[in-house]
Each structure stands twice: as structure tokens, then as C-alpha cells.
Image 1 (cartoon, rainbow, N blue to C red):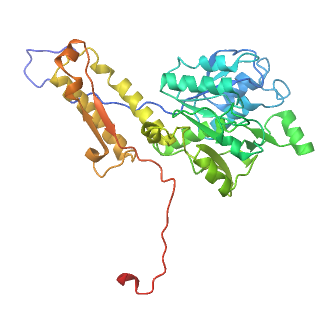
Image 2 (cartoon, rainbow, N blue to C red):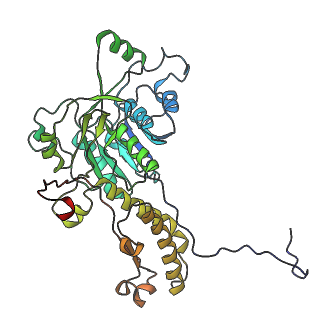
Length: 398
């Protein structure tokens, strides 16, 4: 209806009040690279998969007769098990790169330009080239997290898990605050025709790399609790055992070297570690010791990067600073209220500033506006200490 400016009465004008809100970005879209059980269509390209049924259709069944179980793949492999485990544990969407007989490291590179991806892995590959490609991508993009799988089988000398790959018999992936390493492999049930027959007739066990199931666990916790909750002390759904049961004494030595162990607990195979492959060499690396802290900061960074785009090319004046401050504080207030930041009040949990030394007239003439944000993430309670003493008097007098 046209606005009648000269008509007596009440006129309604809808306006935007306050600063533009900032929405949180997604945190659990995965990218998997490997060799599919059976595919003739999607080769060497990132392909979006949004369900286990779609993965069956695109990478396991024969496209000429997708409903016939006897056609297509008859046995599963590492990529298939990982993607299905991702969805079984709570994942909702992932990109799959089927390299066929091609180079896995090159396949990882094909994920680099997809900004939606938050977690990357190459299920079952544990060589230096693949580890290096994963590390390079997460550290170049700084908007995603890598999951490293262990080598196939059992590591005979558990100490080698703490020794860098390429040093003697060491198998530990390269250090990175954007990656985590999990051990051991997990046992899964057969789902394809020949595998089911082998499982039934010979008792064959099927072992899988944990990265796909762990990525699904990340997604499940992100949705239920938030990215600030450590993805640990949770059972991996769809698993029935671990290939190398680790004891308390063994994990004591591995945990300090950032090897996240999957333990055989009563609830089932349980992720019982939450550390990045950080270095202890510098204070900065120590700040990102825990996976949830690294992923929380990445979530905040990417949300601000997207949410503050409205301010680009606006007049660089005090009004813009006030608008940005209101938008950022509104977003961080929500993050703090979710329990992601430590502090009794918002002012204890974070700050938002425009430091004068970085916002001089000379900097403004260069088109720059520098915003500084300080955060107090809540690290996980990794060690619970209970102090117990026996009293020789009334408890209320002690």
C-alpha cells in the first residue's frame, strides 16, 4: 500500500533500532578425504553429503540399481566407516572427497576453499604427507580443526605414540594447536553383505579409524551443549570395542603428550582426552592446550568476521565504534551466559576496546579501525581433586 503523506491519522514506519545482531556460525560441518567403497560418479571433487542414506546412494550402492544390496560395494572401508560413524554420532553434514587411486594429500587441498568446513580428517591415513597436508590447511585457514588417526593396528611400544613421526619408531603427528590425535582404533559391526557374512561365519572383527566417529561426537556435543564443552568423557555410538585397551598408568604418560585415548569403559568406547597437539614451549601454545578452548575462540573469531561485515566502508567515526561495541557485546553476552566464558559478570569474562595506540589519525587515514577483544574461556575440569581427612572432633568444630 502506498504511503499517504497528507492523510490525517496514524502512520507506521518500521525502522531498525540498536546495533545489528551477530549470529554464531556453524561449528560441526566435516570434510573427509579418502577412497570410497564404491563410486563411479563423484571423483576428486568435494561432494556435500547430508545423511547416511545419501552416502549409501552416492558412494556404496551401484547407481544403476541402488536398492539392490548385492550390487555395489560388498565390503566397507575406512572412509565408508568414518562417514557413517559421523552421522551415527550426531553429524549432520559433511563434504566427501573420493580420491580413488589418487593422492590423498591433494584431495585434502580441495577442501581448503570451502569456508563452511569446520573439521577435517583423512580416515585411516597416518603417513607424514597426509599429516602434513592436514596441518598446513588448518594453520593456513585458521577456521577449522584437524583430527589425526593413528596407524593401523596396535602400537607395540606405547611410548612411540609420544615420539614424533620420523624420529625412530615414533608415530605422533606434528604439533599444532588446530589439531588433535586419537588412539586406538575402534571396533565396529559389519554393515555390508560380505562383511556380515565374514563376521557371522568366521568371527572376523572390523577395526576402524576413530576420526569419523569423533567428528560426529564433536557435532553432537556442539548441538547439545555448545562448542565450549570439551568433546570428551562421551561414548562413541556404533562402536563395540577398542583395538588396544589402555590402562590408567599408560594414559598418565600419554595424556601429557597430548595423545587423546579412547578407553574401554562400561558405557562403551569412550573418548577420554581433550587436548590439542600443542607445544609447551610458549605461553600462547599453553593457552590453547584444550580442544574446546581452541574451537571456542575459532567460533568467536569466525562469527565476528561474518557479523561485523556491515561495518566495512562505514564512516570511521565514534558512532561506528559505539555500534560495533554494542553488536560485539550483545554477541559475547550470549556466549558468556551459555557458560563458555569464566566470570561472575560479563565484565569479568571479556572486554571490548578500541586501543588508542592502534587507532591514531594516521591509521584512520589508511582506512583502518582496530578492535581488541579479551576473552576468559572456561577450560575443562580435566583433573578433579578430592581432599578427604578423618576428623578427631565434631565436624562443625573443625
